[in-house]
Length: 224
Image (cartoon, rainbow, N blue to C red):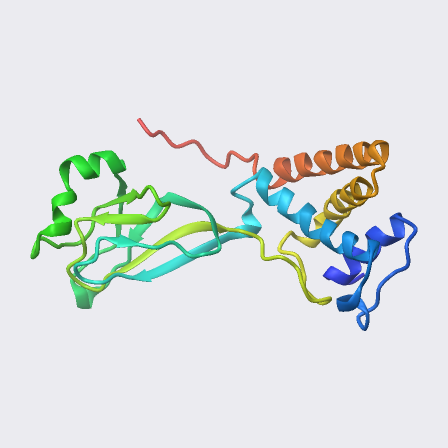
């Protein structure tokens, strides 16, 4: 069975005893069919809201730093950033070895180091990263060369739109999406009892995903 927006929507429509869609009429769906399409995206959004660190939303960002620039913007599709993963890549041409940046509290930065933003010729290889109040990040000291910065982050889901779009949620959890979408479809129709039954199944499916994908302890590392 294919794993596309069309296929998942049709699974929901079948549960609701509604007419299925085809690739030809998917974009022109009407009435309750549209609500079922929306329910699929609502279910995927809920799964992503329950956890900010699903493995299937993980991404690595590479940023070429600008000499003299302190503050930088995270990608627009970011849901959360893992600040423990900020590092400068090794580059012999720039005379820098690989280095992991330490996290600096923003208030401490403003109290001790913010003068760098109004001072020239104090740049170097960054050793600290701080999270700014607008949910972006800054570096101290600011870079004096175009170093390559890398860090890990987790993406927001992109809403499914075309019939052939596939969810980022792995296919083995397709029934979790379908259970959630079915619950929302019943909610749209005002059937509270069926909504409750299906939403409970949806929540149980998410818990199983958490157990399989997140609740692991591969090793223990002291942070003392």
